[in-house]
Image (cartoon, rainbow, N blue to C red; front, side, top):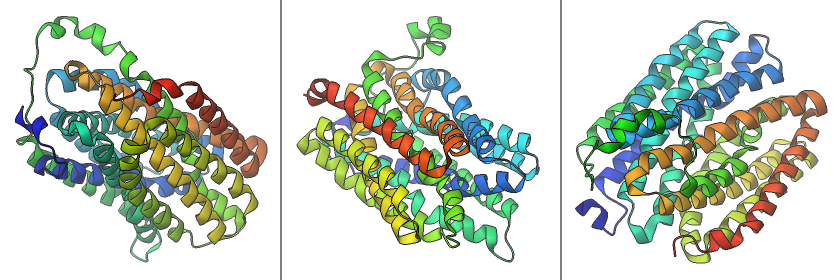
Length: 396
């Protein structure tokens, strides 16, 4: 219980938690540019690429209630460690050069992703100081997104190196996930829980597993989902768009948008503690809309990087603010289930966004796709304005 009385973010538990998340997210961001290329090489069209990417989201969403119940009844750290181990094992299915095998691997990887994020977010809600939740959420999500700086370019370097290839990339991602599991194991002993485990909830375990919606956490979850619907277009399909524009060396793009996300999230997360959650979320939607419209007007690497950077600034402030909202609203008794509900938003938006993006490219091309996503984000901004009072009263 003393753990939650500490008025500092920089505890040993927090730092090890961030390290484990960084290693777990390394796999995801290494695969972000590589999987579309791998699938294209196997003969997949953009729509089929979107379906395979969506497999990751489908499984991740389905298992969240079960994983959240496990976190409440057993161990948040154990859930996170198990997720990392599962990620490490299932990626080896990608060694089979067959599109259905890759789809299966990505679907199973979604189960590991559910454990990584549900356990991690639950631990963040447990250990964050009450008056510094925005700052803690910004730092935490900044560490997660910092994997975008080195790992996509590193993955492309491994892919195209004389000694490299797809199998080397897949093997290295497994190593990162295993290292994350070891880091989580080192952290587990320092986690102090203010409540005992088990109890009456166990008798109704089947209801808990099939209980998907947590009302207290629904608004930040919905906002996070909306904010991230366009993210696959920026992180996954952008490399295919660059090929269409004739841009050959695209590694710098991933390094720049990753650095932007890493630096912006801690700073802008802290800012939301001062200016309010409503203004921060509105700014996030606004910047993403500007970026998605502007990217249709550029045709070179520098222009695409500028648009990607603008988008990631908006995504950084929006995502860190919605995480702070979720941490504020989470009930300690149901923390695992509620943070599982919140963490559903990312894979759900990733899956739905991948399907929207791939379908829009096939029907209207890349320019039509970006304009459609800008319209979707504009609708999200209107929704945020409609919920301004609820957002303004959060945390008070």
